[in-house]
Image 1 (cartoon, rainbow, N blue to C red):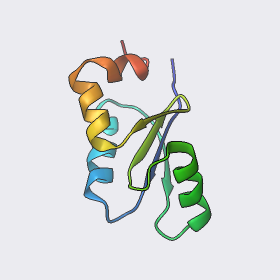
Image 2 (cartoon, rainbow, N blue to C red):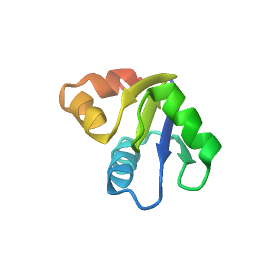
Image 3 (cartoon, helix red, strand yellow):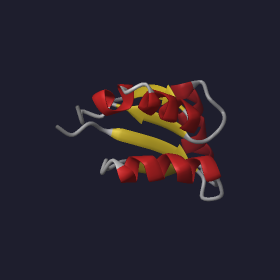
Image 4 (cartoon, rainbow, N blue to C red):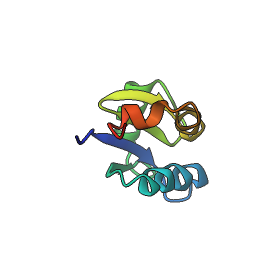
Length: 86
C-alpha cells in the first residue's frame, strides 16, 4: 500500500534533512516541494498547514506538522500506521 507523502522544505533546513532521512530510512517515497524561492508554493504550504516554518509534512493529504511532530508520531508507533507500513 502506497500512501502519498508530501514535504515542504528548503535546502538549508536541518530539520528538513532530518525528516527526509527518517522517511528514507523507512523506505517511504515522498514528494519534496522546495519553498525557498517559490512564494506561491510557500503560500500554498501556509494555507494547507497553517504553519510558517519548514518542514511541513502531509501524509495522505493530512497535515501532521513538522519534523518533531513526525518523530513524536514515530516514537508513539503511529507513523508506521499512517504510512501503511504496519
